[in-house]
Image 1 (tube, rainbow, N blue to C red):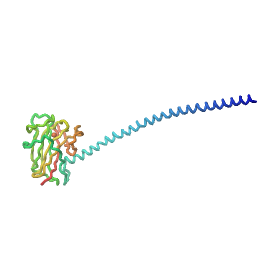
Image 2: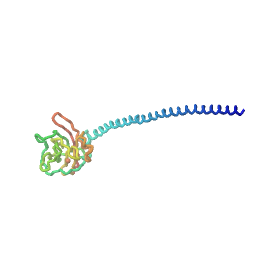
Image 3: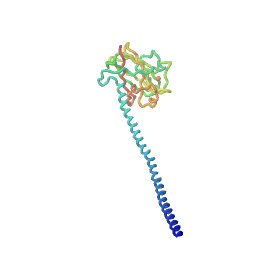
Image 4: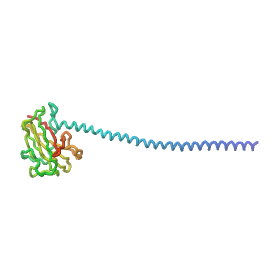
Length: 243
Ligand code: FE
Protein backbone atom coordinates (compact mmCIF):
# COMPACT_ATOMS: atom_id res chain seq x y z
CA UNK A 1 0.00 0.00 0.00
CA UNK A 2 2.74 2.35 0.92
CA UNK A 3 4.57 1.65 -2.32
CA UNK A 4 1.38 2.22 -4.29
CA UNK A 5 0.77 5.41 -2.47
CA UNK A 6 4.31 6.60 -3.07
CA UNK A 7 4.15 5.58 -6.72
CA UNK A 8 0.88 7.34 -7.34
CA UNK A 9 2.14 10.37 -5.53
CA UNK A 10 5.24 10.46 -7.73
CA UNK A 11 3.09 10.12 -10.83
CA UNK A 12 0.73 12.76 -9.63
CA UNK A 13 3.59 15.11 -8.81
CA UNK A 14 5.25 14.59 -12.16
CA UNK A 15 1.94 15.17 -13.93
CA UNK A 16 1.53 18.39 -12.03
CA UNK A 17 5.12 19.32 -12.84
CA UNK A 18 4.62 18.54 -16.50
CA UNK A 19 1.42 20.45 -16.57
CA UNK A 20 3.16 23.32 -14.89
CA UNK A 21 6.01 23.20 -17.41
CA UNK A 22 3.60 22.88 -20.24
CA UNK A 23 1.59 25.82 -19.07
CA UNK A 24 4.71 27.72 -18.20
CA UNK A 25 6.09 27.35 -21.68
CA UNK A 26 3.10 28.83 -23.40
CA UNK A 27 3.19 31.69 -20.96
CA UNK A 28 6.83 32.27 -21.80
CA UNK A 29 6.01 32.09 -25.47
CA UNK A 30 3.13 34.36 -25.02
CA UNK A 31 5.28 36.81 -23.18
CA UNK A 32 7.74 36.62 -26.01
CA UNK A 33 4.98 37.28 -28.41
CA UNK A 34 3.89 40.02 -26.20
CA UNK A 35 7.39 41.44 -26.48
CA UNK A 36 7.17 41.10 -30.18
CA UNK A 37 3.80 42.63 -30.01
CA UNK A 38 5.42 45.28 -27.96
CA UNK A 39 7.57 45.90 -30.98
CA UNK A 40 4.53 47.55 -32.42
CA UNK A 41 5.47 49.86 -29.65
CA UNK A 42 8.21 50.57 -32.13
CA UNK A 43 5.25 51.30 -34.35
CA UNK A 44 4.52 53.88 -31.76
CA UNK A 45 8.07 54.99 -32.53
CA UNK A 46 6.88 55.27 -36.04
CA UNK A 47 4.08 57.39 -34.89
CA UNK A 48 6.47 60.21 -33.93
CA UNK A 49 7.45 60.09 -37.57
CA UNK A 50 3.80 60.26 -38.26
CA UNK A 51 3.87 63.29 -36.08
CA UNK A 52 6.64 64.52 -38.30
CA UNK A 53 4.18 65.00 -41.08
CA UNK A 54 2.38 67.08 -38.54
CA UNK A 55 5.59 69.07 -38.61
CA UNK A 56 5.13 69.05 -42.31
CA UNK A 57 2.01 70.91 -41.52
CA UNK A 58 4.33 73.47 -39.97
CA UNK A 59 6.16 74.07 -43.21
CA UNK A 60 2.70 74.50 -44.57
CA UNK A 61 2.13 77.11 -41.94
CA UNK A 62 5.47 78.55 -43.02
CA UNK A 63 4.05 78.65 -46.45
CA UNK A 64 1.29 80.47 -44.74
CA UNK A 65 4.10 82.99 -44.52
CA UNK A 66 2.59 84.23 -47.74
CA UNK A 67 0.46 85.80 -45.09
CA UNK A 68 3.63 87.79 -44.90
CA UNK A 69 2.88 88.49 -48.50
CA UNK A 70 -0.38 89.88 -47.36
CA UNK A 71 1.71 91.84 -44.88
CA UNK A 72 3.95 93.06 -47.61
CA UNK A 73 0.80 93.88 -49.45
CA UNK A 74 -0.10 95.88 -46.40
CA UNK A 75 3.36 97.34 -46.53
CA UNK A 76 2.49 98.55 -49.98
CA UNK A 77 0.17 101.00 -48.29
CA UNK A 78 2.87 103.04 -46.57
CA UNK A 79 4.75 103.37 -49.83
CA UNK A 80 1.60 104.62 -51.50
CA UNK A 81 0.33 106.70 -48.62
CA UNK A 82 -2.71 108.83 -49.42
CA UNK A 83 -3.48 106.87 -52.58
CA UNK A 84 -6.86 105.28 -53.20
CA UNK A 85 -8.87 108.25 -52.02
CA UNK A 86 -7.56 108.25 -48.47
CA UNK A 87 -7.90 111.56 -46.68
CA UNK A 88 -5.58 111.03 -43.73
CA UNK A 89 -2.23 109.38 -43.20
CA UNK A 90 0.42 109.03 -40.51
CA UNK A 91 3.72 110.77 -41.03
CA UNK A 92 6.47 108.70 -42.60
CA UNK A 93 8.27 106.52 -40.06
CA UNK A 94 11.46 108.12 -38.77
CA UNK A 95 14.73 106.20 -38.65
CA UNK A 96 18.25 107.03 -37.58
CA UNK A 97 20.30 109.43 -39.68
CA UNK A 98 23.40 107.27 -39.40
CA UNK A 99 26.98 108.56 -39.42
CA UNK A 100 27.32 109.55 -43.08
CA UNK A 101 25.06 112.55 -43.59
CA UNK A 102 26.76 115.56 -45.13
CA UNK A 103 24.77 118.81 -45.01
CA UNK A 104 24.81 121.18 -47.95
CA UNK A 105 24.31 118.67 -50.78
CA UNK A 106 23.91 120.04 -54.29
CA UNK A 107 20.38 120.61 -55.60
CA UNK A 108 19.72 117.87 -58.13
CA UNK A 109 17.16 115.15 -58.76
CA UNK A 110 19.63 112.91 -60.56
CA UNK A 111 22.35 111.33 -58.46
CA UNK A 112 23.13 108.81 -61.18
CA UNK A 113 26.20 109.70 -63.22
CA UNK A 114 27.16 108.31 -66.62
CA UNK A 115 29.21 105.16 -66.23
CA UNK A 116 28.37 104.79 -62.55
CA UNK A 117 28.40 101.16 -61.37
CA UNK A 118 25.16 99.61 -60.21
CA UNK A 119 21.59 99.14 -61.33
CA UNK A 120 19.85 102.34 -62.32
CA UNK A 121 16.85 103.16 -60.15
CA UNK A 122 14.12 105.78 -60.56
CA UNK A 123 11.92 106.58 -57.57
CA UNK A 124 8.91 108.81 -58.02
CA UNK A 125 6.23 109.91 -55.62
CA UNK A 126 4.51 112.69 -53.76
CA UNK A 127 4.95 114.46 -50.49
CA UNK A 128 1.64 114.85 -48.65
CA UNK A 129 0.58 116.39 -45.37
CA UNK A 130 -1.35 114.27 -42.85
CA UNK A 131 -4.61 115.34 -44.53
CA UNK A 132 -3.30 113.90 -47.80
CA UNK A 133 -2.91 117.30 -49.36
CA UNK A 134 0.12 117.50 -51.65
CA UNK A 135 2.94 119.62 -50.29
CA UNK A 136 4.51 121.86 -52.90
CA UNK A 137 8.10 122.94 -52.49
CA UNK A 138 8.84 120.27 -49.88
CA UNK A 139 12.57 119.70 -49.34
CA UNK A 140 13.94 116.20 -49.99
CA UNK A 141 17.59 115.37 -49.30
CA UNK A 142 18.87 111.92 -50.35
CA UNK A 143 22.22 110.25 -49.65
CA UNK A 144 23.40 106.69 -50.08
CA UNK A 145 26.29 104.28 -50.57
CA UNK A 146 27.39 103.35 -54.07
CA UNK A 147 26.94 99.90 -55.56
CA UNK A 148 29.97 98.72 -53.58
CA UNK A 149 28.52 99.86 -50.29
CA UNK A 150 30.83 102.88 -49.98
CA UNK A 151 29.86 106.46 -49.11
CA UNK A 152 31.55 109.50 -50.56
CA UNK A 153 32.37 111.25 -47.30
CA UNK A 154 34.66 113.84 -48.85
CA UNK A 155 32.42 114.92 -51.72
CA UNK A 156 28.80 114.69 -52.80
CA UNK A 157 28.66 111.64 -55.02
CA UNK A 158 25.20 110.06 -54.62
CA UNK A 159 24.06 112.99 -52.48
CA UNK A 160 21.55 115.62 -53.51
CA UNK A 161 18.51 117.58 -52.49
CA UNK A 162 15.48 118.70 -54.44
CA UNK A 163 12.05 120.29 -53.96
CA UNK A 164 8.65 118.95 -54.91
CA UNK A 165 6.76 120.68 -57.70
CA UNK A 166 3.38 122.40 -57.42
CA UNK A 167 1.70 118.98 -57.23
CA UNK A 168 3.96 117.75 -54.47
CA UNK A 169 5.71 115.45 -56.94
CA UNK A 170 9.37 114.42 -56.95
CA UNK A 171 11.62 112.15 -59.01
CA UNK A 172 14.92 110.66 -57.85
CA UNK A 173 17.23 109.01 -60.37
CA UNK A 174 20.01 107.02 -58.76
CA UNK A 175 21.49 103.51 -58.49
CA UNK A 176 20.68 100.62 -56.17
CA UNK A 177 23.06 100.98 -53.21
CA UNK A 178 25.32 98.13 -52.14
CA UNK A 179 25.38 96.61 -48.71
CA UNK A 180 28.08 97.32 -46.14
CA UNK A 181 28.86 95.48 -42.90
CA UNK A 182 25.90 95.44 -40.57
CA UNK A 183 23.46 97.07 -42.97
CA UNK A 184 21.11 95.97 -45.69
CA UNK A 185 20.52 97.97 -48.88
CA UNK A 186 19.09 101.40 -48.01
CA UNK A 187 18.80 104.99 -49.14
CA UNK A 188 18.88 107.74 -46.51
CA UNK A 189 16.63 110.74 -46.76
CA UNK A 190 15.31 113.82 -45.07
CA UNK A 191 11.98 115.35 -46.04
CA UNK A 192 10.39 118.54 -44.82
CA UNK A 193 7.39 120.67 -45.66
CA UNK A 194 8.25 124.36 -45.93
CA UNK A 195 8.90 125.48 -42.36
CA UNK A 196 7.75 122.07 -41.15
CA UNK A 197 9.48 119.49 -39.01
CA UNK A 198 12.22 117.46 -40.68
CA UNK A 199 11.60 113.75 -40.98
CA UNK A 200 14.77 111.64 -41.28
CA UNK A 201 14.28 108.14 -42.58
CA UNK A 202 15.52 105.40 -44.92
CA UNK A 203 14.11 103.42 -47.84
CA UNK A 204 14.65 99.68 -48.28
CA UNK A 205 14.55 97.09 -51.03
CA UNK A 206 12.41 93.95 -51.14
CA UNK A 207 13.95 90.50 -51.38
CA UNK A 208 17.28 91.42 -49.81
CA UNK A 209 18.44 88.68 -47.42
CA UNK A 210 20.09 91.17 -45.07
CA UNK A 211 16.74 92.85 -44.39
CA UNK A 212 16.06 90.14 -41.81
CA UNK A 213 19.24 90.80 -39.83
CA UNK A 214 19.24 94.59 -40.08
CA UNK A 215 18.04 96.10 -36.81
CA UNK A 216 17.02 99.35 -38.49
CA UNK A 217 15.04 97.82 -41.34
CA UNK A 218 11.29 98.39 -41.37
CA UNK A 219 9.01 96.91 -43.98
CA UNK A 220 6.80 99.99 -44.03
CA UNK A 221 9.68 101.68 -45.83
CA UNK A 222 10.08 99.05 -48.53
CA UNK A 223 10.19 100.34 -52.08
CA UNK A 224 7.68 98.48 -54.28
CA UNK A 225 10.29 97.82 -56.95
CA UNK A 226 9.19 97.24 -60.51
CA UNK A 227 11.65 96.09 -63.12
CA UNK A 228 11.63 97.50 -66.61
CA UNK A 229 14.02 96.58 -69.37
CA UNK A 230 16.20 99.58 -68.73
CA UNK A 231 16.02 100.20 -65.00
CA UNK A 232 14.26 99.61 -61.71
CA UNK A 233 11.36 101.83 -60.80
CA UNK A 234 9.43 102.42 -57.60
CA UNK A 235 6.88 104.81 -56.23
CA UNK A 236 7.04 106.05 -52.67
CA UNK A 237 4.93 108.77 -51.09
CA UNK A 238 6.09 110.62 -48.01
CA UNK A 239 3.83 112.17 -45.39
CA UNK A 240 5.07 115.11 -43.36
CA UNK A 241 3.69 117.40 -40.69
CA UNK A 242 2.98 120.90 -41.84
CA UNK A 243 3.39 123.95 -39.61
FE1 FE B 1 23.76 104.12 -44.42
